[in-house]
Image (cartoon, rainbow over the protein chains, first blue to last red):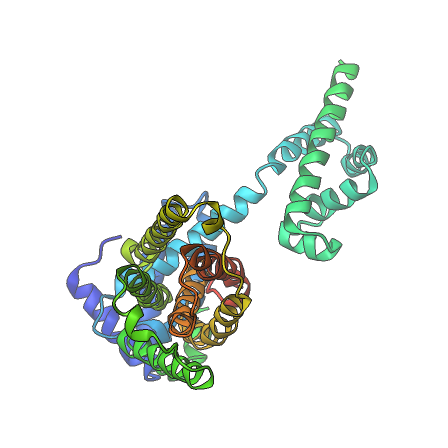
Length: 186
Length: 213
């Protein structure tokens, strides 16, 4: 993560020129920054794909915030501050879906159990039918449609906290139902 | 993607240095305070106030809080500055001192004058002026923060709220004629604290972050 003084100066110089509209300097800056950011995220993200996504998102943020870089100051702390926030945001959004791990596991288990194609989907729907309407809608949007908690909250006109609570209750109920079902099948 | 970003490149005016942004906000705050004092005249016994140690400590603390909070909010709106813990915590340390100082003053007053010292002199105008002038002063600092790139909008919001309400209170304290500690605690300290909390709540909603996709 540490940049040599020379490297930092070079990036700072390119950024200064980019603020003035120099596209060639900006191209050099983004290419070198991309490499640095990739290296930064690879050891911190859960996969190579996630590292790539984070790198690209950070480059977009750097682009949007380029007016806040103050020439004469080191470039690295500025860029890595943005990268760090991106990473924190990434982990935060992932942690919001952590309770879903329970459901992921159960869905995986069901997929394995219901091997004939198409039956898994039916089985998921059947399982979800155990749930009250409000809980079922939340789980469907989160886990079947793949919406984020924020998007689900917006879709259902609920608060984020309400979505989390509803999802948590749904997962608990599902876990109990599946456990009972599993024991019954054995 | 890099090609797209390069294609999208337009010249930008770098954000003003922090000193310039701070001077701009202080200028607005002083102008607002002058306007307030012209609208509502300064208390006549101001010379007495200037001789009272307690009132001077109170006014000095509020002024210091306004300046450090504004400085912190403006610095934190620049990426890479959020690790400078003093900018975050110093204003809250001063707020903490002010709270303790006010509570101690109320307690002393209660010991000397009895339980009635715990009842604040009712003067809602103080709280309303702090809220009104605070809202007015939040606008310029909010614009300065929005013009940068706050990575921690909650902190920036809280500090901006604290700076604006404290600056408003500096003006209010030149007008307010009630001196009992209970009045200070209820109509001065609580509004500033609430305004700070409000800023922390509204910060993420009103200040854009680079994390927005």
